[in-house]
Length: 364
Image (cartoon, rainbow, N blue to C red):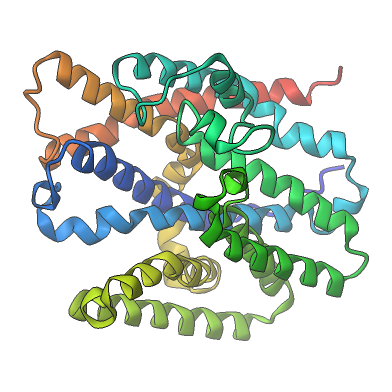
């Protein structure tokens, strides 16, 4: 029996936009910060600082979309789904692609060490298994994954398992909602304590707090009438636009000082991302844009782009260094070329993951 729900095109398009934000932020980190070029050398000029530095907030949007889609697909049938089948769908299909991506990152690191950390056999094996950020060891023992973007997958896997536990424990809707709220509160608390307590790295509030916000957004989307959904989405988007406009005109650092500015950046994504997701679902102009075929195509590759983009950027840095550093990464044509060159690798990864997914569905 096929119990899958209708495909939400606009949500896929939103993932495509979010992937471009993440790529831009990591390009900023790898080629601007680490190379000491400074803000003045940013692609498209110093005015792009706001976009490149804070584009990392799209990570929360990725987690929120994952939570929304998980609840959308499993809310009504989670109690009847066996743990083995659920685990197989969300984990085993990723093992071979994980091996490929981490091997690629391992060879890159021979020329370009990540955070000057040595790749031990334990660290590499745990990176491939996607369990290296606190599942069986502490962050202090293993550091980041060999491919640092796999951090997202590590935490996302935990979110999937936590959702399964919540779905099986909740006997009614009220208990379900209370457990989701509890996960959000704990996640926001861990957001402040994670850097100080290495074992809590895997319980990073940037992961499962927005994931379970996405779960609650799905509940609102399914239960509220269309008029209320559109009204809430409109008000939310207008508030986001107002905050961003104030940020660009006045600058929060000037008004609130350094601490206030950092707090704004730290928590703004938890406020902005839900409004963006609701707008994608309920506001026709936004929905229509996100369902544009090029955006949809990009959204279909968004997971693969996330996996491979750091490796591609590191390849550019390595080749540039071997050639005597003749390329300026602050030039916008180089930035665009780097982004475009990720697409073939992402398509190859997407193809490989699809083959593994088909093989996983075959009866043993």
